[in-house]
Length: 295
Image 1 (cartoon, rainbow, N blue to C red):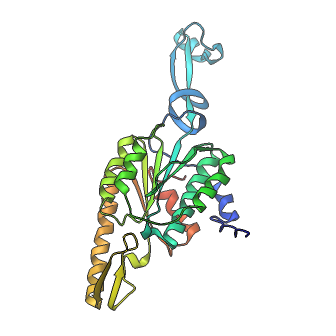
Image 2 (cartoon, helix red, strand yellow; image 1 turned 45 degrees about the vertical axis):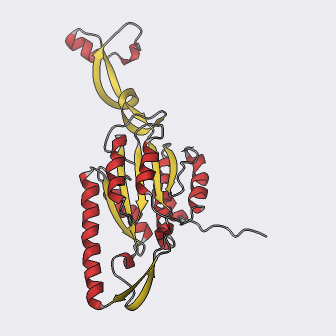
């Protein structure tokens, strides 16, 4: 039996436009390889940072002769280092993400990961409830592995968000950038958001929702089934009940956004009906940390 090909996550035209972007961070983060990001270390980029006194054995080519002529002191020019950033994609694969929400999470994670790998950053994919970080991907050679990993994700089970964040925090590696893709439909969302900044890196939350999460698409006497536990409940959805639900859901969205931003993390809200390219090229360039994880 021949396995049918998996759907393409991102169109070639969008990938071409993404190649011009870069994953940005608000803080200067020290990585392990030479990349495209400003580091707290000094290195060999073209951006001047500071002077220091010459010491025997230093590279004579870095002596600033103009400063020597003015101050009669041997001063070395120091330049900004450029480092890689480790980008951790934490994706909610619980039952409530089944269908278009998980597809959108895969697409957006593919966009962030593609830009990171194009710019020689390190990317790892983490999921909950299944967990596991998988291999560390680096550079353009890691793009096929990233897309294969994302394409293979399936939605099932509960949303152990707090446990997933603890697992992520215990993994080795530099602070880097963590991007969460989830509908946050779990009582644990607040605990998870509060824990993640403890890694001292950058955090962004991509809140993925279906319009029916906010506005019920049912009316009358119906039986609702929990997508994660299978539990059922009989309800009667009148126009007044639907209106009250929408008001509560809207207030919850505001609470989530406020909690995330108070954690000094980036937040962007995405509906499954939003245009994918506009979301990536618009909201992502202005809605995540430091006025955009992508810039």
